[in-house]
Image (cartoon, rainbow, N blue to C red; front, side, top):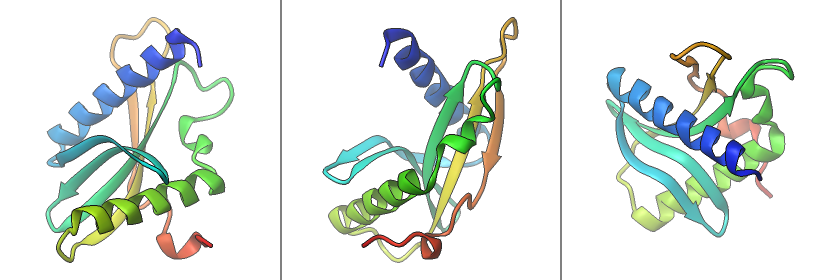
Length: 128
């Protein structure tokens, strides 16, 4: 991955974190990594634990960012979330998988952010 793409991704994650905090989400962990994979942000909204994938693009020429969260990526996020829950021994909380699609259109200073709550259900992802 090029340095420019890494920088864009980091910029998108920062914008996503700030956006979520403005909307009442308490960010618990950034970039949780384990053997199963990585989750960009883990937060809490009232009594729900959020596992958040951030996808950032500089344009929508190849489609909106959320299309990159395909079935294989969903499986990896679910496995990583299970690892997190087992490792941290989190008390019983409802869990939700969200996607934040961040686009930085050329010439605009403020990114466009789409928050897809409950973007995919864990029940729909077979993890074997």
